[in-house]
Length: 331
Image (cartoon, rainbow, N blue to C red; front, side):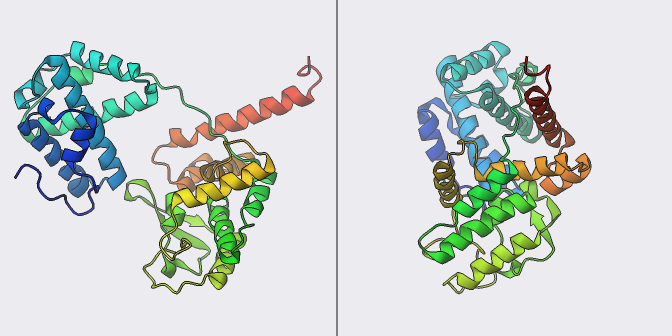
């Protein structure tokens, strides 16, 4: 059977669904689709990639295969995959930019296609030197846009104005954790009932299954306990700590909407998002003289270069203060 049952932990949408969305099934040979399916199983079962990452990769590669089927003028069989040259790859990249995607998104798609070919080379002896020879689009790193400390306090307080007291307390507790512990929204919403009462040091499993320990401020622990005391739902130890109105796991979108309403009421910019509170956590530590390596560990960044962007934020802040306060800066 061509489309075998998806592995445990794999995305809910199958290869056939993604291929139908990305391109005509006739443009991808049965052999190429089966290879794609095997790679997805490898990513899920062997590499341990998250379901969302796997679904994005299979969508990107299916789109690439569909384009090549149209561009080359035939189904993309196993042999054809290895014959793709740099001219064809550049044509695909140009078409994707013509579709309006950013250089960052195209770089991600190219990375997915390279990963697919890397697996093909090792598992099936199908190599494509051109995919590694083409230049990756240059991506200009954007600076994080943290929320200033006074605004962070105000927006968290404003998010606690829901007509249901327990929901108001829930939103305050979750957002306080993002700000006070530097958690990603998925990490905060991934906490279980058995994790509470929160300890002084919390063990978090972040991206790629990487574990780290983060201190939890007393204010965050107290906010979580206030929420738990008001929550009407009695849940088992393995159920989600933060619950939606009907007792299911709280969705990121619900928390994002709560903060959006609060920032609109306060007149704050659209950049004041839950994830911006994590940026605020990092920049506050940086401004207080925090060690870059320590901040990297607290944030769970795999690379120090990812954390170093906060030094640029601090430098930009200092320059802004200088230009506003220094006589020569005011022109």
